[in-house]
Amino acid sequence: MLLCGRLELLLETLVNLIETDIPARMDRLPWSNWHTRVVIALGVTWLLDGLEGSLGGSLSGALKGDRSSGGLGLSDAELGLSSSFYLGGAVLGALLFGYLADRFGRRKLFFWTLLLYLCATAATGLSWSLLSFTCFRVLTGAGIGGEYAAINSAVDELTPARLRGRIDLWINGTFWLGIILGSVVSVLSLSSSIFDHAPGWRLAFCSGVPIGIFVLWMRRFIPESPRWLLSHGYLERAETVVQEVEAAVQRGLRSLPRTTALVRIRTHAGSSMARMIELLGGRYSRRALLCFALMAAQAFFYNSVFFSLSLVLMRYYSVSAEKVGYYFIPIAIANFLGPILLGRFFDTVGRRTMICATYSMSGIALLGSSVLFEQDLLGATSQVVWWAVAFFFASTAASSAYLTVSEVFPQEIRATAIAFFYAIGTLAGGVSGPLVFGHLIGSGLRTPLFAGYVAGATAMVAAGIAQGLWGVAAERRSLESVAEIG
Image (cartoon, rainbow, N blue to C red; front, side, top):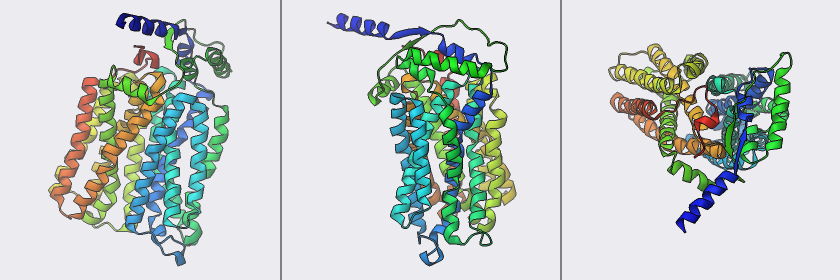
């Protein structure tokens, strides 16, 4: 009976295998205007997430104002609650839409996730109470979280293999442009010389709507991922899409590079959490542990260290609340420049070396500044310089975590895996971090906060070591070869 079962499984696998040159044809394409449009239309997700994250903090003063002055009368605890619910919405949205993206396709989902975001963030500007504000923030987070899974998988599946690393990191780096944009929008919307407080914060929450509408229009021209079509047995549709892409890329070129490389792809009818758990707990268990380490470490680093910087500057360096924002500018710039300047090395030097180096360097920089902080040897400016160095590497490291998750697992669970590791990484590292650091800073002592910084630095270095030991050399390789058929 056991032998018959194995033979049936083997026959089923052979029946569901197809050979095709479509992945090789997509990977050999030169960079073109078509690719640029794809990156702009899909990559805006990270910018919108940065915008929303920035607005959530920058507009807190206006939201705390009483109703007579145009605010909602929210307390600090209620604002913290709404922020936690936004994060929870992002986690749930990622899990739901990630599963749906693997089951029904990337294209359908990146329309619905962006539409959900647009409606929810516009509705946030119409909030009338804590309950309505929190509900709309949950839905906004769900749209952003869903975008992560559908978009990251689509971008990697449409980008040529030789450029996949730098493109992915560059797109993720636009999160910090969103942070800067959100700060500018907040300053303008809350300026009494431009708006009264009542419409100001409401209009600020709608600032992502024009961007989203324009991108929604651009996404009409983005095709379904040929790799997803192949994995679901839609060979003719995949061939049609690739021919259309080749025609668009070939405009202005004499000919495209030729390829005869064939790859085996296993087709399947749908996607399930059970299948993902089976793969992550079996053949891909080591990669799963690596991805968890990378995602959890960067989530703890950012959700604890980064989002407590303003409290540290005010409590330990006596920086006024009005001036704290200025200190964030060089840190945001460093976060943006890290992936931009280092991204190309992920395709040349290689993933294993660069991910290990960026995680380790960010941890070492944080550890160095922590020692000086504990000894009270830094001023506000020198502390910010140290932080900028740490986040220059940490931003690149965090972006590479998403890149790793999208590359190292099979096509059938790619979007679901991105959502899963984003969720558990955020819950493991992102939820506990702010609670711990809030308590440490509240003590007013340097030594407990120093211990917290050491924990964050250790997590990053440990993740870097894990990458050095278990990392996958995915540079310039097709997605199919990185996660070969079992």
